[in-house]
Length: 354
Image (cartoon, rainbow, N blue to C red; front, side):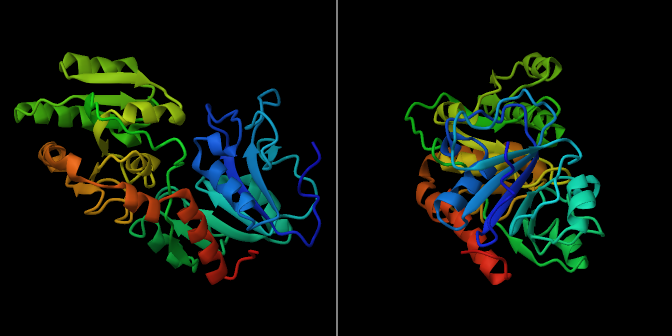
């Protein structure tokens, strides 16, 4: 592959560094069919004319793995070997957008940036423990909730901005009048303890003890022991297994409410909040979760004390049909809104943008 970094100096370029590809990331027909926020975000920066060239960077040791797209999407893909051992001595982009990784140990910054002319670096940590190390400085930092990461970044003299992250909304617009489940809960993998599926199980037990008989659907791969726990408690729960996000919409369209209990100690603002809202579902979020009022407010749902979840969920279910979320989502959390938000902050902070 000819590296896209060999580019004309007059062109403005941006890189969205995604780190290691997740197991089910592609291949997609094009960027718009991707269920990954950052892939669509990068595509909108390019198709909107904000930059001349946009690249997605990955660390990928498996040379036999197919690319992210089935054919040329217009986005350039660069697959560096683990540790960035194959980075040639060429120019870096004008803007480097880094999503949350443990950059303290990331060789991209340790081995590459310190020895080359730096791009304008935008950092997006995905939780309170994802902060740039002392030897590395971002030009500014997007955060999902100012309460958790911002104090750490301010100590390092990095400007902090609140970012409106959206759902990938092309496929999250299905509606159905037939509601099969009262609640939807999304837990991406059996090891994702930060999603607190075990807490959701206890909430369902508490609701039953209060004589509220509600059913639920759990989307995502789960361990057999967790599933057996729900069965042993005789809870009315359907497990779908892993679903690509383009198929999640079919399940969510048959739900009345989304429930999010993720721990803010280990997780940023869960993307599923925006995806619930894109489907028109009000959300109940535990106060343990990293979540800004730009997502959950009087128009979209409630943040409930963790100890009061059983009653809080029941109260919202009783009025779930009265929420009208579409206008709020389109105005505040669409993908186009996220891109415009990014461009505004780039201009405000002196970053290169057309």
